[in-house]
Image (cartoon, rainbow, N blue to C red; front, side, top):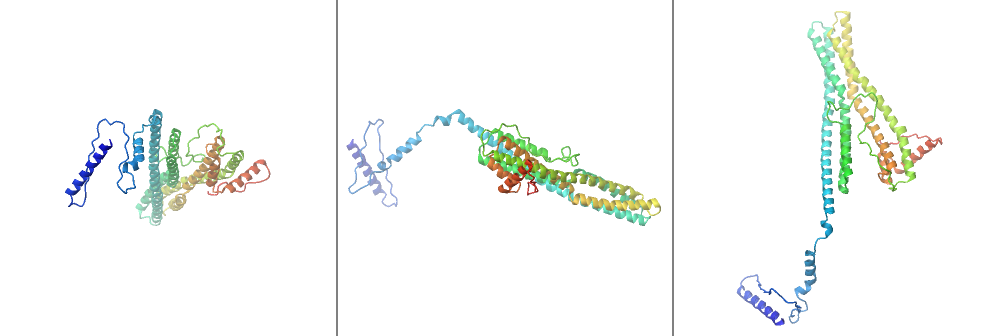
Length: 430
């Protein structure tokens, strides 16, 4: 066998020499060799190749034998049974399905953000344009009534002022019904809340641990926001003048859950502290915003009725305004005073955006209501980590942790009847 290897080495050397001599004029040299291996080779022990005189390095195969064997072993290694098990394949498909559903919800939420933003800008333009148009029509009709009363020969002025007052009454009635400034505030809040939901979905995707319950919860939150802030006006618009002031509600009902057995960062002291915070929110913040909201709701009702009534009276009076009789003089005076008062009332109601202020109080009261339910739910079921939830409540109220605990101590002393009073609101933000 050694003689065969030596013969193969000789033929390889001879072939390389012949190729080198035939291509001496070229810059590159080519070395070609062919080794014929028989089909059946008996078990052999390959001897180390002969070293040239003075060489101190082993051959290429001997140097890289370990790496070559490891590569062959990796390539021929069979797949593990766990990687091909039906349970692992099913879990992977389920995760991909959940991720696809969450991405679909994220796309719809992002689209709703843009929709509410664009419609809010449109309705803000409505408020400005309608207010300017109604006031210009009212002032023009008032001026025509004064001219008609001073010069009876201008018969057409009475008819023109009557038509303008009538048109202003109709436009003002529609404007007061839909309350454009209040609609704008609804769209602002809807945009903010949908952006918050969008960020929540992105965090869930980044974490990657999705469940079917997460997908259902996100769907319920989207539908709750759609019901709280509808886009269409006809048939779905929020009642602008309810009989009783109620806080806004944009979150779904909390599902009934059993209390977690693990502490999850909660302690008896922390649960008592959270209950004390809820007591302050109910007694101070929620009560105050509901009181202010009721005041502005009643004020908006009075202004919404007064504007069309004043322009309607001015329209009737302008038809009989003249200086030829006592009745004509009184009618002219009523038209002039009614038109001026209507312009002032409209400017105060829509220029001052009383409806927007009422909606702002409604949303603030809803924010505190949401905090109350969230705190009570977490104290009862420990859904979120206690330490993280305490920090979350402190940030929502605009307080540090020490300020939040101090407020809870005051509320606790008040509940025990120690003579202490809570002289501040829970929230420092609004």
